[in-house]
Image (cartoon, rainbow over all chains, first blue to last red; front, top):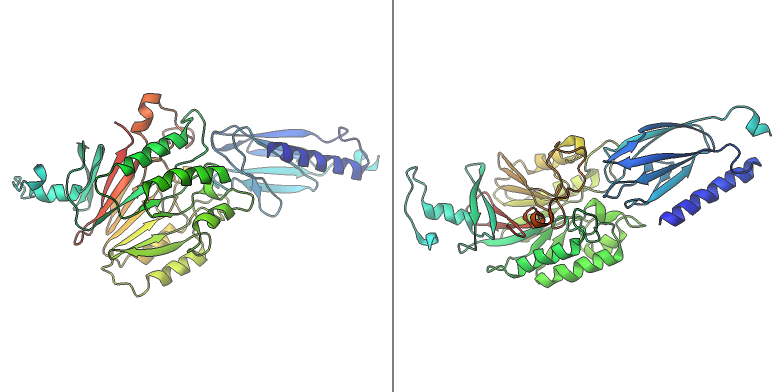
Length: 118
Length: 314
């Protein structure tokens, strides 16, 4: 499950790179959200369009990462990861579908200027 | 044996009466509920009294597939729980499992659980926990196995010896920031299911997540649970059995007795006593003292069902 999730994320990151005509490493950042003690950390994360966020479950209990209408992970067992590449700006609120009191948000800012025109 | 004594204590309660309330006891703390107040009456070594009426069992939160430090062998402790069931002198009418049969909804976990639970040779009525509905197509595996005669995500009712049992599902379509959730469709079904039933019919409602708010910060409650209690208000005897929180919590409010069962897999902390509700690692020799099963007895004429929680050991 972990492997295929990561492969999927890599594939979509690659797709973004192809579409924008950039090498994958040029602009996109890789960021992490840790799931620990039934909380997302950092609870609020700012990223840029094209960045990939990877959630890592460090609890002994499975969790999911759900943003209605945007993304939804499978159940993440301990140490499982889920990645999502943000391609549009906006605020993405998400929660754990199993423990919905666990909430977080990703704020995606538009990239400015040169990268898009290169 | 004491069960035949009829000596009266100074407050006029006959000893026989008290012992009738016990009805069954394994090794463990016995809860008897009289006058609206649940009372622990101490450790009891073995089965005590005959029962009229009938008994049924509750097991919960087996988490088959869990292998973390809090219990590296959840399948093994489920086996121990079922061995305890098999050894009961009074055969229960049936068993209910209040969810989290599996840890990750995997086919093998469901298979392993079934292989062990079926050894009890009891009709077993299930409701899913949130861990049972996290397969690829959420809830598919659970419904294939246990949802044949149920509605929606797996809710249903049945009758036994004049008692009406209702199994509810409050672990699907959970809302961000919310608690357990039943949803409008299930509530409408429940209203219809209860319609026309006499107020004197004893009702037992079971679901995975507590239907009342035990601890909101950890999500231990059900958003629309109060609506269920509203529908049950007119009934003289209501018993609500839940799991999810891996510890015994019991309270009585009016005609309603609430009870949560222990897990057969691992304990969770008391509300607010830890940074999160995650599994608690206790010393190996203490684990079986915090896991267990519950035996519930209904006696005709008693408005409250007697619930006896029994640890696997200790």
